[in-house]
Length: 234
Image (tube, rainbow, N blue to C red; front, side, top):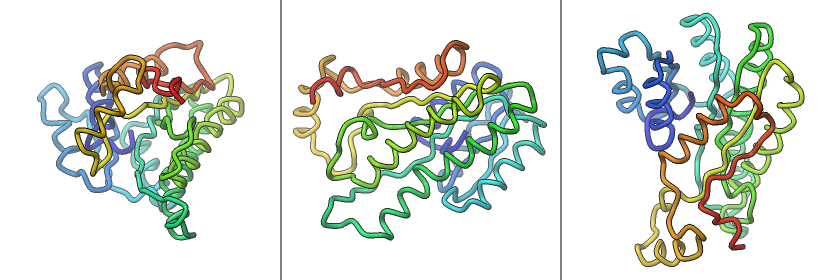
């Protein structure tokens, strides 16, 4: 589980632990959040915390090797680690583009492919990539982020074919769960009125979608949008 220390990633990690899973909890900066995942006595020994900068391919290998060394195999991968950086056209340059794509597209793609090929030798597994509504509808102020998430969605479908039938690969594409930094309450309210359900999706609803993609054996190559109908309003 990448990006397990805070926000949606932590909520997904908690859900897996509540179901009795052993967890490799990756973090980059949220060390305390990851440490606290294993504080409950019932989870003693169930959580391996691994810090890494996933924009570096050798660091991705290190996380994968640590997981296999500790638990022997990997049954489920959730690629959640991501960054949200505002990159309108006037601010877009090669460095900004590369930095966003390294974490939002290359990192989950490499981890999914490297783990997925091993899963086939273990008899099967499931990969869930956390995409974004930005990968489905245009976000002109977040050009690098939106294009990376669109690429992750298509990669998900390609990898699902490449690893079938042993390994299932899906993605969840949440709508706006938490407003971006700097949004005023007035802007959030205006945005909320554009959503057919009349509210932002909740974190627990996205978690439920991830669990569905893991548990339903008929699902592979799917991009499950959890947005309250937001994408219908464009």
